Amino acid sequence: MELQTTDVRPSVWMALVPIVLTLALLGVQIFYYGDFTPHIPLAIGIALTALVGLAEGLKWDQVEKGVFHVIAVSFPAVSVLLLVGMIVGTWIASGTVPTLIYYGLSLLSPQIFLAAGMVLCSIVSLSLGTSWGTVGTVGLALMGIGEGFGIPAYWTAGAVVSGAFFGDKISPLSDTTNLAPAVTETNVFDHIRNMIPTTIPAMLIALAIYTVVGFTMIGDAPSFERIESFKSALSGAFVISPWLLLPAVLVITLAVLKMPAIPTLFIGVVLASIMAAVVQGAQLHDIFTYANYGYKVETGVEAMDKLMNRGGIQSMMWTISLILIALGFGGALERTGCLATLIEVLTTRVKSFAGIQTSAIMASVATNTVAGDPYLSIALPGRMFYPVYDRIGYSRLNLARATEEGGTLISPLIPWNAGGAFVITALGLGLSEGNFENLLYIPLSFACWLSPLIGIFYAWTGLFSPKA
Image 1 (cartoon, rainbow, N blue to C red):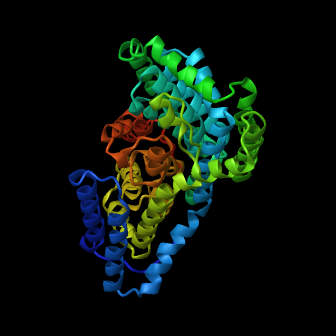
Image 2 (cartoon, one colour):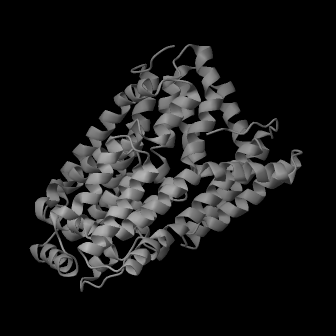
Image 3 (cartoon, rainbow, N blue to C red):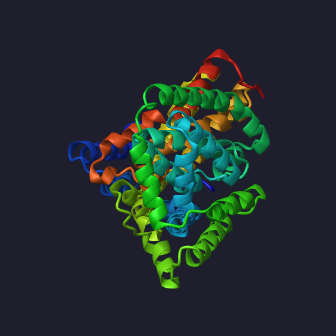
């Protein structure tokens, strides 16, 4: 990601004005009015930031260029979102997702479901190199299995997010895994190895928690009748066969063979469309409709209908519009120098390695929160902090790890961030319908927030903190 350079440096208080006011508007919209649509507060944030830029001597076209620069950088991610929408619609229509749910209800037990779900998502995400692709496919199927077991949606979503973003963090196929070392000018495989000391403990702790919860809190939750009703609804509405898992197997195989993500996902759409026609009897126009507007079915089981009636390009438009506005806000903050001013304050006042490493992690978290963009939260702190690491004699691998922990892993935990908005939409958490209890997936995504905490612990103890 090519960052924008600017000579504008507003004062700290001026830089804080658009950030604080925008966060206040977000708070009013979401928590006071109970309306989870952050679009307009973020759009107002762009206007407030533009006013700061104008006050600092920038012209509107310079601010506008900053907004559209970051939006343009997001187009590959938006393309993945569109394909995920198509995959969800066609994989349901083909019977791939129903088959995954059916066999999951048959083979898994409620006690091990959360732990197994996290492990499965981590393996798939590591293979695909995309957390979003994993959440939208395997994650969706796991939500259906969890519903059949009577497990609250926020518990399942927490396990899915923990596993999916773990794989995204350390997969050499992931864009963010390559972005962090590119910005800090380090080797990608050295970067992956340096993330193992924080990633593995976080995953093991999360795995232990999900296992304990499965055997204590959830062990007796589902009833045999509920599971059978789900399986009967699925077998009544779809042909169920192991052959229908071929789209998922093919996509993972192509990813392992290092095929690019976009053509790999599109091939998954094409194969699922063929199977929908051949196996499920769908017509060509029906397939086009499923890919664009999503799948529609009435199984007679309301909970199953809610899970199956989704997908399509249009289902992603709410998320895409939020991402574009949030990225525009981030681009305006970057172009006007607001983010650079705040990060420079940290880099000049903090002297110890522990303080700098902690500040780098928190700067990535703050950029994620304010700008709504995981890429900017890696790229901007990475560029601003790396001269400091050279000055104090510590390897920039520490910085690359810090930006991944505060950027990649925290992204899905911020509802108006690109990652959080996608998770909420793809997993059907229904915040826009007022299901705010599903926000509990945030603290229950243990691996995502444990890893930065472990990284801060290492910084203050000197463990796993290589010097230059």
